[in-house]
Length: 269
Image (cartoon, rainbow, N blue to C red; front, side, top):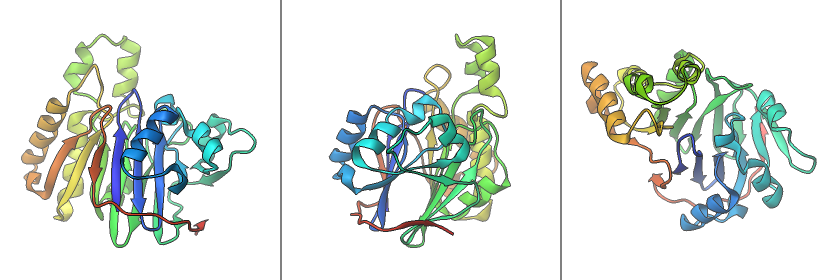
């Protein structure tokens, strides 16, 4: 399994997950031409992508979701609330999912996970193939036991680490926006992300963490990694992470070996 984060942050989010059982695009918050070019650089043709999984309807996650689906005849996978907000046009195939309802993509298993965010029906995702699991959860202001459980088997955890609380309070955002970001339906700060990763690490397993959706105004990669690492050290579990990487806004980061994909039927159990 190969996971490639194409972009992460308020200017756009997109991740490609490739396995021999199929290639999935998780969010499409970049222009169509950018996603096509980045996939090409990874050796992935758009005809290999079997579906676009949309976590929620905010613009930085859906910019080219519909246009890609229409052009390449790719179905959009999302919750009913997200699909209503997207207003899927005629001719674009869609598949309704629900948090906790497992999806099978050949031998590839996908579990949508409900998250706390100010969108219609947002979800994260845990994906398993060949005994290997990755979990992605961004755009959430709080976390729960279900998300922790979904990360317990994951070798790669992609979790939001949006802002440093002190930086958020001091940046130029309006008071209303600051309140929204810091709320339980907004975005996780660095300490919250670190505490979440420490809770996941209580199982004693070793894994990799990607810190996602960093704020351009209230965070930096250096601050995020330093803060998260400090929390993990406080909980004496920093050694449980092979690496902690803050995802850049516009640069491809890859985890795992490259794999080729093939067409398989998509179904829900």
